[in-house]
Length: 331
Image (cartoon, rainbow, N blue to C red; front, side, top):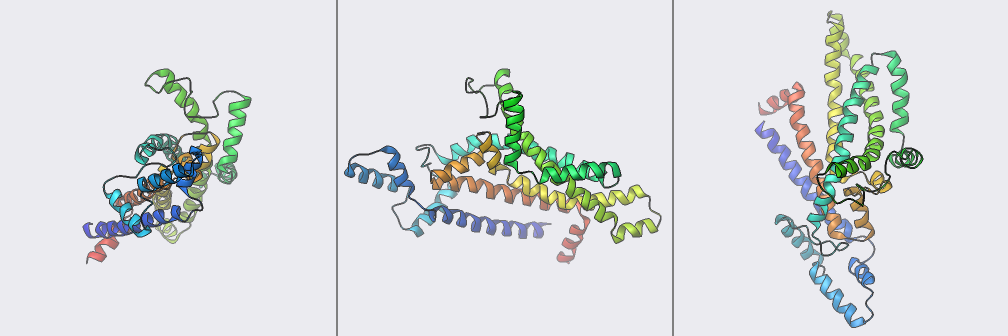
């Protein structure tokens, strides 16, 4: 176990280094100059004042040194936990901005992913052995999984928000309220949360149901299932083994979904103006905010790596074949 997870940690550390290097490179190859963009918003009339402000911002953001030194400074700051200062929301630290957006993304995506995974797998498993459910769940699942997030979000906002007037269609809470622990504010949060959650839940539900249904059928038609039936094993026992094997790809898919959780759902958050991390990434791209973009992508990279490491642990606990391979490697 120690050697197995030691190798995994080395691979994850190398992946983190490469991903963060690419994360540092990409913003700097984007067209435009973030400092010039900020100076344009300042509307300075004097060329001398503009030149002085440009030199000040370049020195402040560390853009006045060669690229190789900027790269080394990036890793040095990252080691100290310093993600820099936002160019767009100057002078706010990037870490504070991201920490303010992450709870909204987590509150939106975590329930949507987990509930859709549980309900979708349950429906898919029953649809694999129930003809009536198979004839209803499968077509509905294909429709849901083929539905674009943004289109469904717009449809829900129009139908339940504008026409029916049941839910608000923008923001995370009413602008007339001050964030607090009062029932009024919590109720406003839930009202603004429901439509983005529902759009994400419905689209993900179809994919999980179809995936589990197909995997169950595949496992029930495999050699080991036929062999168990030939030995006279109860059908219930065969289905239990089929379900456990079918769950492995679903667990991998869940890990990948949870890993990108902090990225937010860009399209859904844009439609509902929901202030999560996905919406923050879009604003960082629009405003050429290198440091905010780097910080947001770092959260995504770390989230994916942690989720995959957790799923490696779960695989060892769930799949006995993994433990046999580990013992064979140790021998």
